[in-house]
Amino acid sequence: MTVSSEPTEGAAGSTQAILVMCAGVLCLVLNDSLAKWLMDHYAPLQIIFLRNLIALPLVTIMVVSVAGRAALPTRHPGLHLMRGAFSVFAALCFFLSIRALPLAEATSLIFAAPLFITALSVPLLREHVGLRRWTAVIVGFIGVLIIVRPGAATFQTASLLVLCAAMLYALMMISARWIARDESVWTTMFYIVLFPMLISGGLSWTEWQTPSLAHLPFFVAIAIVGSAGIVLITQAFRLAPAAIVAPFDYTALLWASLIGWLVWSEVPDGWTYAGAAVIIASGIYIVFRETRRPGTPVRPERVSARSE
Image (cartoon, rainbow, N blue to C red; front, side):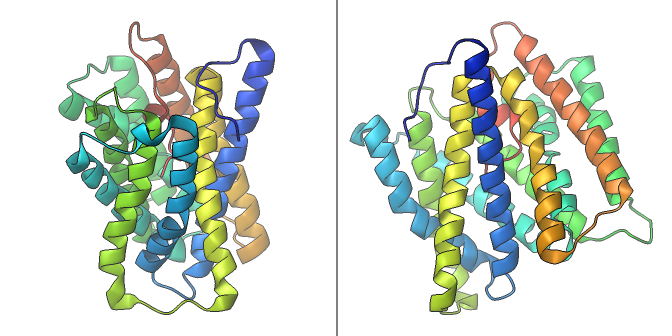
């Protein structure tokens, strides 16, 4: 894959960016689907470890080929380690949740990540969030309540795991802002695979089960689609403005609904889609407001809920 660092001009560039974004989102939904299937046989931490173990050489080759060996050293190992921990426990919470929840419902709730990013940017980044964006955040969390319906007979505690995952993803994305801007996105990508591999590897041995040869292709597949999803989404934001690209992050709900129905015969109720519509509308509005703020660069991690 040739990775460009310059936006592509015109409608053709926007179309290309949208297609790349949709492909990246599909890859990450396939990553989630493979994890859901593999959890019938293995513990989540083992899946996270093997996914990153297999992905690391692939990502290393890609980073070196695109940005050179100079992209591998970092001045902020502690921050990358912290982000790796956020990534591991976010994935752990999400994987545990999809054991009990339909894939589409969990995907709808993970869309709350940009809402957490906006809310947490005030205390953690000292950013100003105006009344309109606060209103969008509140409306988005109303959408979350529509899906979760606390107190209702259909309430599942697994929904809280997804929200925990969304908050941890938000912390991972916000912490990227503390890394000096002279470190490229490729450096960040390398360490967001390396440290989660080390952390999950250290935690997974108590539940370790020797992988079956028949399952190895699935572990390779989850490593490939997970890595490809992050690369494609990053590339999409490089090809076109966030306001054009970011809304297509929500095509994840379509893919999750289709795969959940085909593989597990999952059919979420109407409340799930109603709440998802509210969350998506508020998320798109936040993206719109972000792109209109003068002098504020909009990066993929500020608007995408699917970077993991």
